[in-house]
Length: 385
Image 1 (tube, helix red, strand yellow):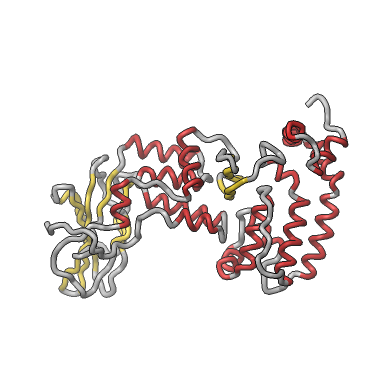
Image 2: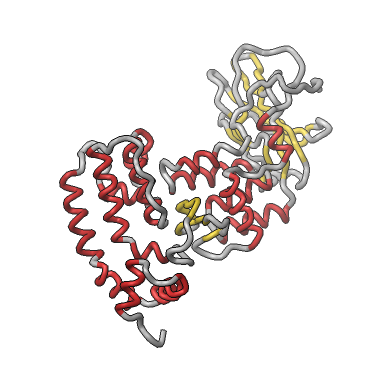
């Protein structure tokens, strides 16, 4: 930078009285100039007002709710385990965290529908204090200062991921076009795109005709109704009470046995040899209880079916995960597109931890139609093999 901003420039930025082109110019300068940012904070009196308000608020804060520090940490996507548990049960603190998150993103706060309670007053005062203190952060995430409103904001990818009112995606770092498109689609639709074969598997599982076994049952967990990145997937199932051991058997499309485990006591097994990439398989587990053999799944439960991804598709997804490990929503969208729903759930869980109490995350997380256990459905039938 050849020339620093004048006091008039900084005052016009604080008051948002400058013309839009000037606001953009000042915003760009501030994003690169530490000295002008310090002058901005001094002119705005942000630090002194912030500290004074925070001290007053902490004196009056109810003891049965999260402290200011905990609320702010939660809004920034780094809650403690105790704070996360509190947010799950406390609507007031969840609302505060949502307000602070919106404030960080430069969004206007929504007024309360009911008269403000003492806790609600504290919530609004905190939001006002943070709005003062976080002026630098506000213009860091805005490329058109004072002009655009963010319709959707999430804590992700090492910062804030936002979709503005014009439909433009804003991310902390630049993503490849295909990755950005998957992320934008997830934000716009609030759903994850899943291949048709797995949508059908999750929403309306196939049912085998045959006698119903109403005695002891246990469910297969994964892989089931999804694609796997590896040719040696980890098979996992629920324990069956009283079982002496289990045996896993894997079949190809023609119901020929291609793999079988030895008798094992654990409720998971990884085969020592790989399956063929691009092929679809089904698997069953046989439990031994005394002298009885109990098999899962049994009619009318759905087959536990999965496909091994082609090696190039699996490598592409692994590369994305290695390059962008903190971009949880983008990774969830990419995994969902490939049908890798176990990995999708893992990324959505991480996204939820970074955005505790977020209704948007809950809505997105409800979209992958991949149940962990297979339940009977009368919607379709298939002859038993």
